Image 1: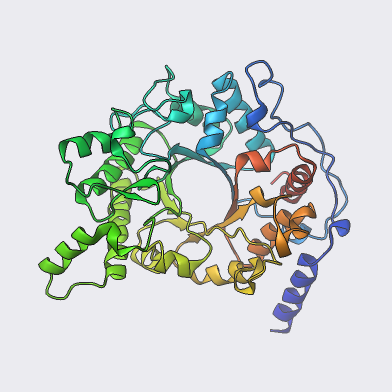
Image 2: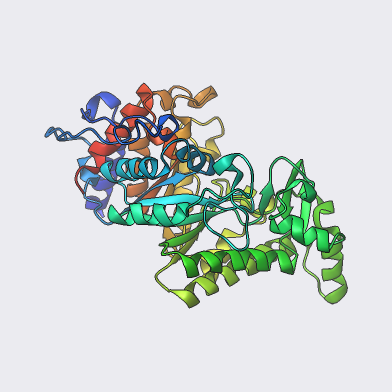
Length: 424
């Protein structure tokens, strides 16, 4: 017992160490993907060859995590930037960056708005490829991304927003003629297949045909591509407004003598979709992982997004979760400060694989009580070590362009991560 107490005391001291006490790398990673063009992609985006310092870091206690997952999210906008210039060279540069930093996994946004960055019979091509939804790039981007990743021993997980159709319109008829939502609503104009909400359009979690489209979309990917996983993020119900699905809920109450409350019914709609997706994935290949990145605020997940994390992990609907722990240690609300959240989420790590989601997008961009710490140049390193202390199985950083930005603070953070990981 005394030894355990001493160990925790040492850990706490190490985690509170100032930046000046931790070694600085001489390594550097060059331009983020949004600056790559066909003429310079082959020379940019690679880790400058360098040998890590032999000085001992005060955090070397944790530098032996050889089997941890080290991932990065590549968003739909970053995917769109890869089409500016030579796509193949840009993707290779991104994968080189990821590999050379010591990372091993990329969560690639392949479907964000009922459209795709892959050749699909169900969804039109993404508007982020050419500026117009439904226009083919003339090749299969996902096929090449998988090839490029696997050549570098990087796992590629297909990241999907299951319900989101559009941020910018509630009108399905303004979508591409190839969009399944427009086609379905044209044939079934009174259907609740998709619902407008706050200027956007979403598939209805209560609609069987909408859920079938989501499930069929996942099956299409795992049957056609050698992906290592399917990944959903934190977009589930877009609102708590009762009018979103009034007719469907009324139907539930009519059919059942003991109907669920609206909130429980909504959570169950999401649960059943996830359970089916999980079963279909495992039916195809048990080695393909399925996981979700829920919001860090679990009360919001449960009460506003109708995402019942406890049911997912206890029911075996997911292989892993990546809570979005995007708050600093000095966040204005103590309840959501990083050290509180990273500990809170460990309640699930006996039931499911647990990774820490870290928000590099805040580097140099935070405000209020968090501003100074996100400008320190060493916060990400501290957060990674803190997640290791609590036995997380790895970490994932949002997102690629922030992690590999050439801004001074981002470069400092990245170099410290490189030294932390070393050659593991």
